[in-house]
Length: 293
Picture 1 (cartoon, rainbow, N blue to C red):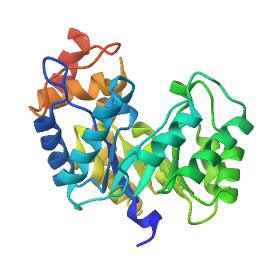
Picture 2 (tube, rainbow, N blue to C red):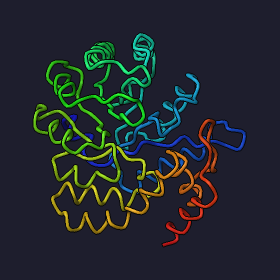
Picture 3 (cartoon, one colour):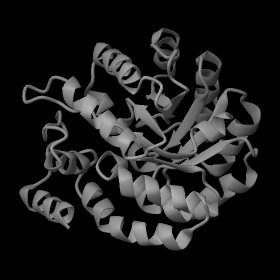
């Protein structure tokens, strides 16, 4: 099975459940992993930004990754998130972090520093050289403050051997289509926007790394599956059901929205580490009403 085939379909960026004292709730994490795999997702992503990684210690990240590998136990592939804006520190982390059971490393582009396109290219080139696993670029300019342009993505795809794909979350459909037109055929392009995943699959993307699939894995994974099979009528019917859900999950903050939904489903406690706080009471009520429907 090629790398592109392994990560085709729905990946889920796992939340990190916490207990009331804000320690990691491994019992709940195990429940979430079973819930999404049984719901039909194709792979899981541990330590993505939805997992509140900026608030996790290095030791917590290591333990979460090891727990996830053991709990998944080969049922689906696991992608591990390692990203940040200190290139030298990330190179060191790639050399020491437990990655033997991961199929790839998802690396969000550097935040806050606002490097030039050449700086972004050199950052990813250095990570690719240091990584024991293929690198998935992660472009999310709404959070990082800098867009990884189509031209830079294509250059990385063509020139840097260990860069195998991208999670594209710019929300710019024209940019997405340029990437799909110009990247090598074996380069994996997946959506990072739940609400745009269906039209992006229609443009040629191979799936999505999803937040919503934490709380609605069955409907979401099925929507992606039928869209990838070219049945956009069925995909639209499922997506129409989920549109309100996407809006509610992202109305205030991610992962506050998805954690509220998962708490209502009895999967986790509704605890987040500062600076992220739980949803406001009014919005939480809307999430509850949506799930009841």
